[in-house]
Structure formats: C-alpha cells, structure tokens
Image (cartoon, rainbow, N blue to C red; front, side):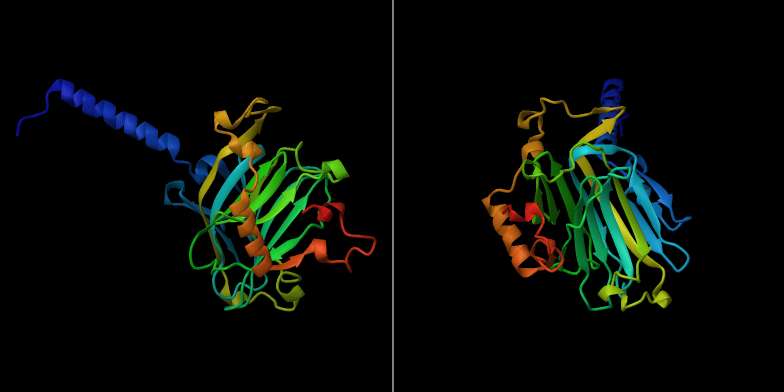
Length: 291
C-alpha cells in the first residue's frame, strides 16, 4: 500500500485538529462548569466529566455549585434520583444568590418509601421571602432513568419544566408590589441530604440507613442560553434580542405550552400555596390573583 503524499497527510492532520477542536469546544463537562463543595469524597465527577454523582450516608450528604453566576438564563440538567426506599432524603437543585435578602429558584425532590411517588417541591424566593410552594407528583418514575429539569428565568417570568413540559410559571408581578428576582446574580447549587425531620409525610417516615449510601446522578448540563455575570457585568448586552439567538430573554408560554401546563396542574399538582386560604388568613399573596 502506498504511503500518503505530503499534501494529503497535511490535510488529514488539519481535519483531525479541526474536528478535535470543534468537539472539545461544543462539549461541556462538570469539571469545567462546577465545583464540588462538600461531602468529603461523597460527590464524584466521572466518565471524563460527563457524569456527576452525589451520595448520602449517615455521616454526611454532599453537594456542588456552579463556577459561574448567572443573571437570567435557560438552564437544563438531567437527573436520575435516588432509587428504592428514599424516604427522608432530599435532592435539591436550585439557583440562589447570596446575602440576607437573597433570591432563589428551587427544585427539591422529596424521597419516599419504595413504590410511593417522589414529591417535586418548587419555590421562588425574592429578596429573602419565599412561602410560594407548589408541589407535584411526576408522571414517570424519576429513579429509572435520567429526565431533564429546566428553569427559564427571564425578566418577565420564571418557568419550571420537566422534559420540556412546563409545570409552573411565576410571572413578574412588580406592578402590584411583588418583588421579582432580577437584580441579583445566582449560582446553581445541588445537594443530597438527610431531612427526615420533615421530608416524608411531615417527618413521620425516617431515613432507613440500612439502604445507604443513597445516590443521585447528573448529566447533560446546559446553560448555553444564559447570561453569565462576571466582574459586575453580564455576557448578554442590553440590546440582546431574538436576532442574537437570545429569544429566551422574552420567551413566554405559547398556547400549546399553556395547555400542557394546565394538564400538569390539573392532574399532578398536590399543593398550591395560592389555594391555601387557611395558611393566609389575611388574604392570599397578591400574585395569586394573576392568572
């Protein structure tokens, strides 16, 4: 077999370099995007950065946080939750700022006895005030495979989605005096921890430590459509628009998505603070009046 000529060999090498660069440039990994913050070895980044696992045992849970801060974004993460008897455990995945008047956007997954459904707990804090819980069952087993949990956060609204289906919308209601998270950059955090004093049936069901270690898994983080906040400025310009690929900054639910949201809330919502009149005897929070 004849050896390749010099020009063809050069072309092959250049192509390989270009392909290698393109692959590395497009593929994100947990080493690049996150720091493990606690757990003394219970959190691990595996598979060349493609997989992250958190573990919990009787001594400790574990957690991680993003290297970047974000001020608005469309953020996806795939999670596979603790299987089997996960009662007493909480897997939290959320955005949060710092300080006593912090902003926060929460997904929390409350474990349960084997065969009983997880509860997906959501909340929004603005300027340190939360008490905006909505809770859901899921329409699948979140421990059997990975599913995508997404937060769309733009100046007009926050939309929580599961596998592309919206489950909750929190609209900007500053016009009626409700603070909205829009001025404080937030990091992404996640942790797996023991909360058996409240997590499962109000604390009646305790963590079964004979089942430990409990493990949750993460993959396919995506924050390509997000504004990174660094040194007091945003990676998104004030003139960012849909023509710049930033349509998400003004995205809202279309009619199909609104129907899917209604389907979830009619069939899978199990708690809504906006219908809990006993909890708010002085009147429901003002944003509850917004459809």
